[in-house]
Length: 351
Ligand code: SAH
Ligand code: SF4
Image (cartoon, rainbow, N blue to C red):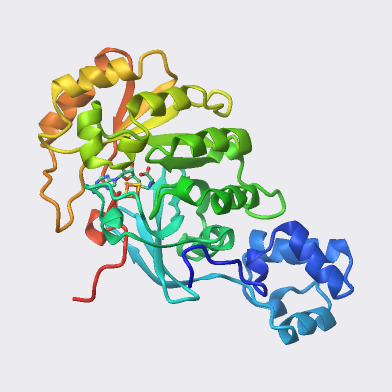
């Protein structure tokens, strides 16, 4: 399969609402019929034409005989962590593997962390997905279908009420599919999320940040991870193209949803970017912005020689930010026991 696969012609899950209407119109069906089918697939999550009880049998048959299918990703395995985090492993139609993480939140709801690519091309030195390199982009249908199919892994009383593009891949490197998937996730007759319940996280592709702001007013998270260009160049090669100043300039212009803050993710790498001086530089960089910082102590995997800083170091770093009025949380590591924590996503080679 090519690095940018074309959406499958016969998968209804790959179709925008308009294309689904055109497809059914070609089969002699009115618009409202396409809307019924759309609801079955995206709102109710059915995978079988026969379950569409208000759709005439003749049409269901036509769809089956025409080779149409529903669904682009197939749940292969669900692993549940002792802390309630669930890692959903999907298989794609070409055999590729991707993962989504469901993070339990107060009130019985879940935040789903979706993948946007198989692997990632950005080569951040501290990230397991980065070490895999990029195999291919996901289609919009494959992104949306992670949310539709993951419902099966949520307890009956729970639901997915936030989607964050923080799984495998750099979402803004796959801009068109990601933008289309945001549109689908917000369709009132489908998954029906609002833009303010969606967050795109990026390593800092500046032109695409500008474009995202003009396309879909979602929340933005920036993986900053360093306070000097010298260190950021080393740990995140993307910085050589768009250094910290250019990144922050574009972020300052980003039109956030009302009353929202920008999130800056900051992976703490022991001895690399976790000094008091770094914390003070971070304050200076973010001065005047509606921002909050999410500190993520580095999650280890076999490979690079980084160190997870001690809890005391993490707290000291956080305190410097808090003392100057900057909201700073430490991301509680969830799902560490099932390799579902940040930066740990990606198929492991068979043991
Ligand atoms: N590619 C996007 C989104 C996916 S990465 C991005 O980089 O923003 C999601 C987050 O995990 C990023 O903030 C990244 O900095 C962080 N991360 C990557 N590897 C990590 C690791 N080993 N430990 C902790 N966080 C990590
Ligand atoms: Fe890609 Fe994000 Fe990992 Fe960097 S941190 S390699 S951009 S997934």
